[in-house]
Length: 480
Image 1 (cartoon, rainbow, N blue to C red):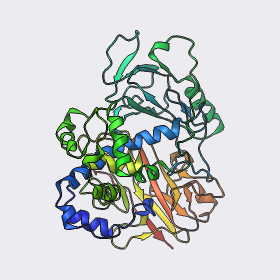
Image 2 (image 1 turned 45 degrees about the vertical axis):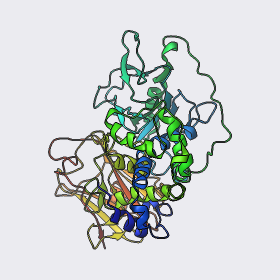
Image 3 (image 1 turned 180 degrees about the horizontal axis):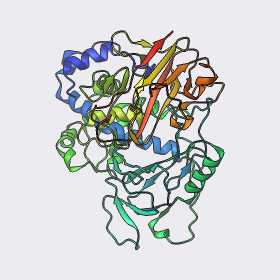
Image 4 (image 1 turned 30 degrees about the vertical axis):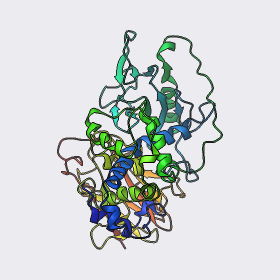
């Protein structure tokens, strides 16, 4: 998307937060002067901030999630795996938009000096995927049922400059950067029996340095850095950095997370504001006015892209989604936006995440309220077309699970959905039970505002498909 001078100025002055950014993407105070808009270094700095945003955010995420001595809950030291053992409940506040469909097994690695070996167990017929993100948030490999099958597999994740010989039976996956995030997901129904089965698979997953492969390896304890803010959300920490702090860290990260060849023309321009790959940031080349205004304006530009995304987001029947995730090429603005609103997003062939904040869609759409009743009707034969699974999750206005009498946070075919006489399927979305005979199809809502998110894992690529627009999600209709 081409953000023009006029659009940026208007967006910065009139941008209102979408629901997931209430209190964060706020309207900017004061006009952007024509003098600032006419300066080449302003636009260069804006491009540099947008380009750098994913790498800086990944580093802050790494710091927070690995700042522990041993794996515990959602965190694990560098080079080790965290294993989430159960789905969160309505009291969970560690991250926004949690899911109740897959159990995560994940960890951060630094492969600049030495590769790491990841061993995956045989999964049987169970759906799982193990995407690997580089420092720029591109998903460079995705072992799993869709791509590599469900047999036992062993991979060596190597850094950009590594050369060497691997043991027999170990397949090399080369990361473009030294920083790697493994973000594995294993489908689980949430029953005690299925929890136990998935826990066994999680425990059979191993991650070790190449030099320790085949040995009785015990990972060292992680070193805790007490200076790291473990409470403030990562996005807020990144957005609070001054331009100098932001670019100083960015230049340090560039030393082990190099730009791609396709980035070279853009990155060469950054030298004018003190950014040269492999060197420390030269703050003297970034004007004081830019240092003061840049972070706020650059984030507003990302949100303007979300608001008027020139085709990067579809908005159909009240559902908004993007199929431009996971691999971004030179679309740096889209990459930065997805980092801000959905860090860790999969490739669209693996998952699409439509979100709905209003009923019906169009000019008459209204925000969902728990005091109203809504129905989503899937006509006969038109349930979401996926080879993995689908679900619809209920969140409150802050993207957290909603407490309800049946402790149901998402709805999917595993609830044994009942069909109507004509073969269609209704999903009832409301605060109170629709009646015992319909509770299998009930997604409980809070009393106040709420948000819906659909998860489509391994969406079918042949017609009908959400990937090419030949299948659309029905609207949530207000009834009664």
